[in-house]
Image 1 (cartoon, rainbow, N blue to C red):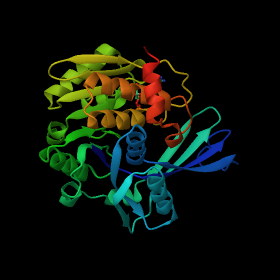
Image 2: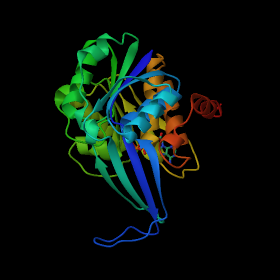
Image 3: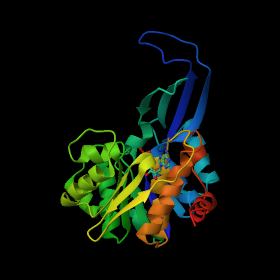
Image 4: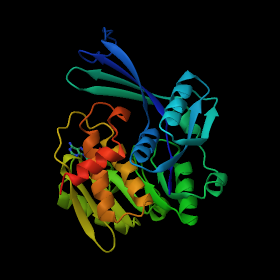
Length: 304
Ligand code: ADP
């Protein structure tokens, strides 16, 4: 019952200052913090903490940032045999945050741009039941990973973030497409940042026509909608005291993959993922906010 995650690992360098500097301006900041990040690593941690065995495929540089991320995988008990060291530097996100919460981010893909799929990944991992990917590694490799995983009988999940145009074959090979509001809109040629439930349902139907079998659109504090050929479901978000929604989507995707790897019904998987996303919004940061299985389960039972 292993979840195989194909994705990015980044070092997030976060600087905090009263305001963001104007072009050409130098200002004095408050502090600089280093966090593990990257959608791949966040989702691998989310799936692992939610209770799955997890194996990650990704690349790091031959540098101290890479060692830092590798140690995080070890401390989270995530399988690292498919983590490759490359000549490129470890992926980095340089994030500037102002007192009022504005941010500016530059991402250097670095080693992530060298991540490759090979057949050996699947043939040597028979316990894998679910294959999960995002788009911070080369899309051609993601497409190969999803295609070969599907052909090998795995359940495939794609979170198309950061969003880019998807080939129709990639959509057809994807069992569950999990997109947020902006991503879902982009995929049907629109550019809106928020959607009503009805608008999201209409987009999900359009995506089904383009080849997606099962579509989930996450709607932040509203919840999420799900559409397959038999049913449509709405899962309301949990009412939480949201302080920072960074990684809510990653927590949702990782927990969803875990529930699906355990053979849970879709209604349960969506509820479990929704609790994970809601809990991630209650704490600052990405990895520090990703909840444990116990926290998710107590959130769900508190509903009864
Ligand atoms: P992303 O982080 O990819 O933009 P969303 O913001 O849609 O994704 O969040 C993913 C899921 O996390 C939502 O569908 C919801 O279940 C949960 N979530 C996100 N923000 C909140 C919030 N403020 N309150 C409760 N749940 C939330």
